[in-house]
Every structure is written in structure tokens, then in C-alpha cells.
Length: 313
Image (cartoon, rainbow, N blue to C red; front, side, top):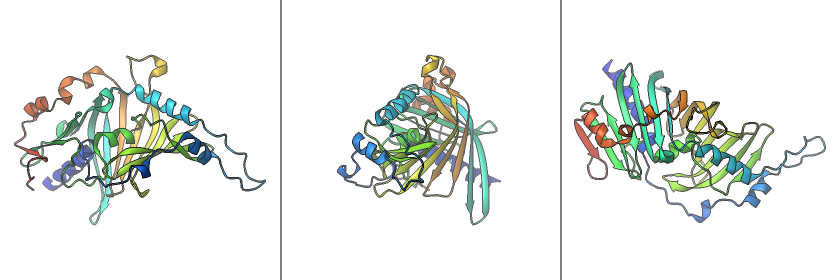
């Protein structure tokens, strides 16, 4: 039983590292990842003609309108809180495995402050968070219990995730604004796909997003390296209107209530199901984002600052 519990703590901690890890940066030329112009986007958006039997061409999309629509939705997510369940399924030499936990995710100031808590049957399993300069991860079930600390740009030791911290999490949840320059790379009857450059964070330098035409909602997101390899992806489905009482009804953003997260560096698949996502003030209290307050509650037996200390096994 102890082995099962510790295995479960490890995968919860791995989920939490989405908030607070950043792999060693892979150097890439900034010129090679510069954003495409809107004229290039229009050219890429034009479907190829393949003869008289081909369907009628899909109208070229208005790139500026696409970006404006996404950024208007994200503007409504300056603060956000949701409670739900997370499931992990993976396969190894011992067979198929499944674990589940209850999670609370909250952020303020557009994601500058983040808190992620995980528990099972009322027992706290992990608590991760970040502010503008630092990330942290509490492991209360570890022996001895431990608090990890590190600069926001520095990775957690032994992380399996090839992408970086809170910005990657927001991107995978379709909660980050897009740059003005994006390229439409594919158009289908029901969807279209856009790509754009991001400032390098570890190996992640580009983002690819599939958008549903009828709703204008991102349904699939890929984080991509400089060679075009997919590092991680998310599938967003069952969109619902977030409960944002501080916003007019027309400005309340749609968010996915079911999220699937995959990393190409390991075989685990996470599914997250949100219950009543919104911005309830009781889920956005100051103490949830204050590492010193959390530390006084969690009372870790040891503290490891990865910028100063050499972690012990």
C-alpha cells in the first residue's frame, strides 16, 4: 500500500510541475522563430484547387479578427478559479494504471500568481504555486516532507516535462493572449489551425492551435520546438461559460470543462474535469498565493532551494 501511495504522490507532483518547471533552454535563433505577417497568413489560408470536382474554396479567414476574438475571451480570464477531478492513466512493464485526485486551480493577474492543490479523500497530496519571480512545490506525503523553491525561470530537478512553467499551463488551457502576427496553416469545413511564435521557454518556441469555426473556441493546442516537434498538447472540449459575476454577460469567457493533457516525453495522459469554473472570491484568497503563509501551515521538514541547494534523493 505504501508503494501505491508513494507512486500516486509522484504523479501528482508531476502534474504540479506544470506550474513550476522550466527545462534548460535550447538555444535557437530569434530570427528563425519570428512571427509570420498577416499577408503570409492569408496566403497560407488559401486552399489548393484540385480540379472541377473539388468542393468550393473555404473563404479566407480574417486573421486580425481571429486574434481579437481570442484576446477578448482571454481578457475575461484575468482571474480564474475552478475545482474538479484529475485522472492519470499510464502503462508500464507492470501493466495499465489509473489514479485520481481532487484538484483546485486558481490564478490572478492573468496568471502571474497561480495556486494548484491536489488531495484525495480529504488528505493533502501536493500544493504548487508561482508568482512573478518564484515557484514552489510542497510534498507533504514525502518522507521527510519537503518544500521545493526555485526562480521562475529555473527547472525543477528531474522533471520529465520539456516545457516551461505557468506560461505553458496557461497556453495549454487556452488562457493566454495571442500575438498580433499569426499564420493560418490549414482550413477545413469545421475547423482552422493557426500558428505563432513564442519567446523561447526551454524547448518550446512555437504554438499551434486548432479552432472550432462555429464557436471560435480553441479545441486542440500543441507546444512545438524549433524543429517542429510536438512537446506537449492539450485537447479542450465541452466548453461552458465561466461564472464571472463581475463581468457583463456578453464578456464572460467560454472555457473547456474537460481537458486532456499529454507530454511527448512520457506515456501518461491526464484528464481534468472542472466543476463550475469561474472566479469565486473564496477560491481566490490572498493566502492561497503566499508561499510564506502556506509554509507556516504545511510545516515541511526540509526546504530545498534549487538555486542554492543540491537536492538529496
